[in-house]
Image (cartoon, rainbow, N blue to C red):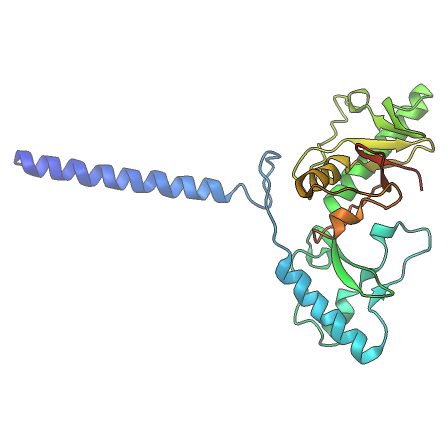
Length: 253
């Protein structure tokens, strides 16, 4: 074999090896999406299409039947967990071609809700991962209280509201996962009221909106609306927030 033929053969071999490596990398990258066990990878889901389709279905349903297709919830149900949309009814009656894969009804991780149901119904998204994280901490808090006769808190952030001390709850058999904000991706703390109820703390998300848009909130408005007005998501498992002059402050309802 001539010198040129050898060089050509080696060049072809390098191309083949490089192709195999690139294909392997693509396959491994694909494995990091839904179903992965890696907590460091976040999948960004765009809800625009799903929300728009459901909103159109809601508008048509209400126009035809003069009611809203909602699953009944008790009066004690929190504001951002109430008025869940009956997607099965919308699909069965032909208002929705198919239920979005992101919906709990299709094995997804969100509920679709209505807000402003009495005046101008608008479709919103409730993240079930957030609900699960808060519920996990709630169970751990109750277990800790039973064992130590005190709440696992680090500081009082406002009257009757405390920050949960996660270090007191972590153990070999009980490793709580971080709660990442659906708005900013930031890791959120947990709050605890004086009755032992756990909440997600959205103060950092609210403050980001205020600083970014240079807003001057009043001291009486519920600042959670700043989040719902700018996102499909509702701040589930939260307390109201008021402006204290320099920062959003969680307050008891």
